Amino acid sequence: MRHLVFVAPKFLENTNRYLAGFAKLDGLKVSVISEDPSVAIPGALKPRLTGGHYQVKNPLDGMQLAEACRSLARHLGPIDRLTGALEQLQLPLALAREFTGIPGMRMAHARRFRDKDEMKRVLRQAGVPVAKSDLATSLDEVSALARRLGFPLIAKPPAGLGSKGTFRLESMEDVDALPHLGLVPSKDSPVQVEQFVRGREFTCETVSIAGKTAWRSGTRYFPSPLEALENPWMQYCVLLPREEQGEPWSRFAPVNDAALKALFAGASPEAATALTHMEWFFTDDDQLVVGEVGARPPGVNIMPLNSLAHETNLIEDWCELIAFDRFTPKPRKWAAGAAFLRGQGRGERVVSVQGLEAAVEAAGDALVELRTPKVGMPRASGYEGEGHALVKAPTTEGAKQALLGIIQRVQVRYG
Ligand SMILES: Nc1ncnc2c1ncn2[C@@H]1O[C@H](COP(=O)(O)OP(=O)(O)OP(=O)(O)O)[C@@H](O)[C@H]1O
Ligand SMILES: [Mg+2]
Image (cartoon, rainbow, N blue to C red; front, side, top):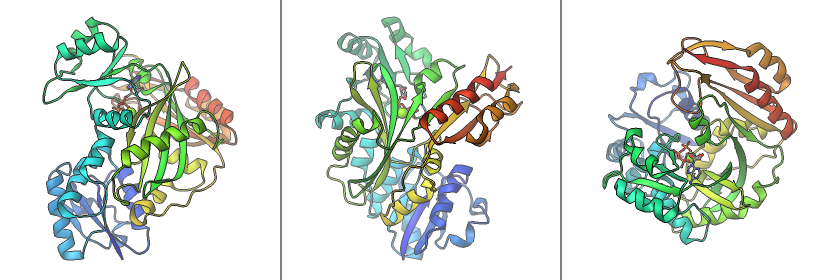
C-alpha cells in the first residue's frame, strides 16, 4: 500500500476537493499535514484517511513539513508521495522531500516552476520563445533595463501569484512610480522586468508521466488577467474549446513539449510526473511565446472546466496521477467556459446585483453552475470577482455566446 501525505494547509472548500480525491483512492494510505487542527477535517472524509494527521504552525516552512513527515513515517511507515495543490506550497514541499528522501520534485526543479527568472533562463537556453527579461535589484537597474529592452514593459515579483504586483510600464515616469505601487526592487527582493508581449493569452494544461506527455488541454483568456486587473469593470472569462486539435493549441503543442522537456531535464521519473499549467501568448506577429508554467493544478476554474468538457472529475484524476503515476485520458465531449462576475464602481462592498434572472434565462441549458455575488460581500481583490458562472455547450461558439450572454446581463455594483 502506498503512503501519501497531503499538505492542506487549511480545510477550505477547494482543498477539501483534493483531499476527497485522495481519500477515494483504493490502495492508498492518506496522511494529512495542516495548519488547521484535525477537528477541522470534514467528518465525511475522516474514515477514508487511514494515515495520520500532523499539525504544523507554518505549512510554508519546508523544515516543519519535513519534521511532520518524519513523525508520520515513524508511526505509519515510509512515505511514497508528498503533495499539495497550492502554488505557494511547491517550494516548501520540495525542500521537505529533499530532507526526508521522499520521491518527487526537488528544489532545483521546483524553482524552475516557481521562479519566473529561473524559468525563463531554462526555457531561453532550450530555444523556447519567451519574452526578453531580467531581474532588477534597484530602480536604476529597472531604468537601465527599460533603455535596453524598450517600453512597454512588465514589472512583477519573480514568484508572483494572481497577477498581484504585476504592472505595465509605459515610460520612465512609470518606472519612478513603482515604489508607490508597492514594488520596490532590492537585492533581497528583486523585480522581474520583461518586454511586454502583445497578443492573445492562452493556457496549456499537460499531464506528464515520467516526463512524457500523456494528455494536453488548453483554454483562452478573455481578456488577459492583466487587462482584467487594469480595468476593474471588465468581467474575466476562460474558454475551453470543443475541438481538441484546434488552432492555435495544436500549433502550440510542440512548444509545450520543448518547454516541459527543458524544465523536467534531469528530474527523477516521480518529479516529472505532474499536471502543469502553462500560460502563453499568441502574439500579434504570429509568434507563440511562453509566459509562465506552474507544476500544480491550475486555478481560475480550469479544473472544473476540464471536468465538464471531458465528462470526468479532473481533481480525482490528478489525485490518481500523483498517487499512482496513472492517468486515463478521456475524449472531449463539450466546450466549456467560466465567467467571473466582478463589481463596478467605487466602494468596498457589493451594494446591488442585477440581471441574474435574465442571464440565467439567456444561458439556458448551457448554465452548469452559478455562484452569485451577494449584496454585502466585500470587494474581491483579484480578477476572480465575487461570483462566477460555469457553462458547457456542444460547440465552442455556443459556450462563448453563453459566457457573453451572462457577462452582458449581470451587473454587480460596489458602493
Ligand atoms: N511579458 C509580458 N507581456 C505581456 N503581458 C504579461 C507579461 N507578463 C505578464 N503579463 C500579464 O500579466 C499577467 C500576470 O503575469 P504572470 O502570469 O507572470 O503573474 P502571476 O502573478 O503568476 O499571475 P497568475 O497567478 O494570475 O497567473 C499575465 O497573465 C499577463 O496577462
Ligand atoms: Mg500567470
